[in-house]
Amino acid sequence: MAEPARLGVIGGSGLYELPGLVDRRWVGSETPWGTPSDEILLGRLGGVEMAFLPRHGRGHRIPPAELNHRANIAALKQLGVRDVLSLSAVGSLRADLPPGTFVVVDQFIDRSSGRARSFFGSGLVAHVSMADPVCSRLGRSLAEVLRASATPSVAGGTYVAIEGPQFSTRAESALYRSWNASVIGMTNLPEAYLAREAELCYASVAMVTDFDCWHPAHDAVTVDAVLAVLLGNAERARALVAAWAGQGEGGATLPSCACRRALDHAIITSSAARDPAMVERLRAIAGRVL
Image (cartoon, rainbow, N blue to C red; front, side, top):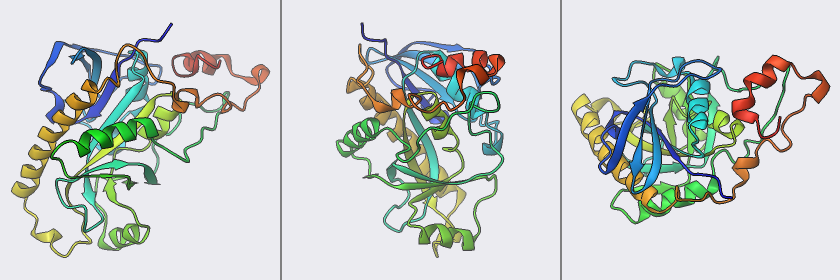
């Protein structure tokens, strides 16, 4: 029997009012790793069950470094989510990615520090592959939706995740450009790591708001200009989510995907050496292999 499907979206305030979302209800959630950023908005979009999580909480209350990514991902998994679309605002590191461009990310460089980046730990150790950190199936699906729309978009790009809350220096920005990175942000890691450990299919669409400080015209950018781009990006993001759901990605069945078997050979700790408390804590994430 095919398992039920549910789409998950992690994003900002522009997605609270998704046109066509029916049976809307906010639900609280608790996980073994604490409380997620906010209640989760459940509903149906085009007949597809959907869960939306405000990454920073409604009203943008939580800074990037204080996000409880483990609780966020665990809460979505507990609700039955299997496919996750992450939407985030970013700065551009390339001249050919101007404000308003959507980038379907396929690689990450981690420059964050001190964030809890794994569900596993002492008493139950696991190592998952992050060679290809996003789901290629979801990435292709999102790229197709964007190509069919009027949204300027690029399929593929590297996201540099910095700690924040400060933006990068000019020297750092130049360094990231020398690494051929595409965009820079503060939120997609360890989110992507944890989605892989939870055996969720995860894809990231980075929405460019402005150029990072490497650009000679960066200092001329005004708050009004950035806000105008943010509003336009939010409108296009709503259209993207609606079209993505309408494709049938979250229909009655879920396609087979390697992401959903990421833990097949990941757990290193022998059965006899596993901490029972850790095993119990991890059942919501790794129950399939425990």
